Length: 474
Image (cartoon, rainbow, N blue to C red):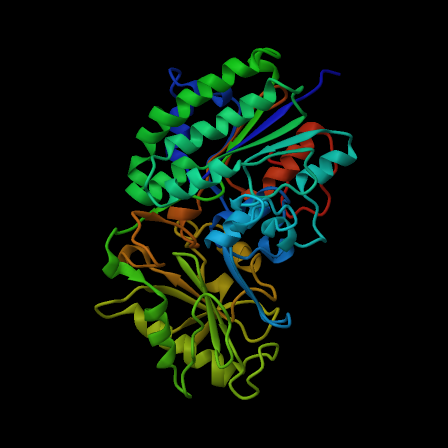
């Protein structure tokens, strides 16, 4: 039997219409890779629609409540002391790739391979696609992605490239330099070693460019920066075998919604603190987004489009204790719901749960509404909503979840951005899915979810994916 090789290409944040239009244009390089084959007409990512949650689901096939990465920021009230993780701060972002921020022997970004926060924070009870493939005797590479557990070759950014990424993130250097560095590292390894059975390739510059300039710029960025690099990739691949003998899977971890690049629309930590002070029953003291201090009674983990609100039981003043639903949670829900109207209204939906592990319900006009009832007929606006909300509910998820109304222009954060994500809304939750190559049917499925990627890979390459929440796409 002819050996199958699968290239899994993850284009961070790309809009489905941008990728599909490029795939349908025979003049593009990407159309040569996946212009024909399988597509999903509509596909949703997991909730919240942020990188670390979505990437973990992309490569385990399970929802965040199983792998444990419930956001780019999360809080675990049950550890002693409670754990607050923020993957987007400089120290943790460096640690994700096995670097310290400062120290010996290099002063800046010394190697600290034991850190790897994303790998280590993910539940040990779930297997990655690399571990699944290994049981079948398949080899795997992974390029620049945060999750590498079980991979045979983790192609990580170098120290200079970590600095380059920081400069791109701070809008001091154009993102094309980061994307070119990503491809360059892959080609370097391809010149030294035989290609593996599975190669995961993570392209991030388009997403960061969209944050800076807005999702409407994606088409030009893809055409001018990314697609020419795909031409280079094709030439490299054809050194080994004809292009038509490879399988390709192209998707995104999440999408992006357009936001207003104006500081008056940023709901920052100070604003959130003022809101929580007004909660009936004595208010809450919000932590400073750095450490959970003595006397703090609330932690909010914000994802631009979503805030997961963790509340201390105001009677026992102990984090592991269940907050009282009527005295603690409902007053906070009422306070946020009032922000659906007024001059600075930014709230769309407020979700609450009665106790740890319970289903979330929608709090609206003083009433609790079951999710199935609330979201009926709203699939176009909130795709796969009920399953995705249930897929985040665990010990690390919030007592309340507050969803931003993107149409208001507001978003949670610290900096002004032209594009953001993290919500349940279709504008940042719909992703493209395209699969091509030998054995792939030329067909379109009406719907898919990000958790279907791992079972599809297993189906194509013949390895076991039992335990995954998703199903093979074809």
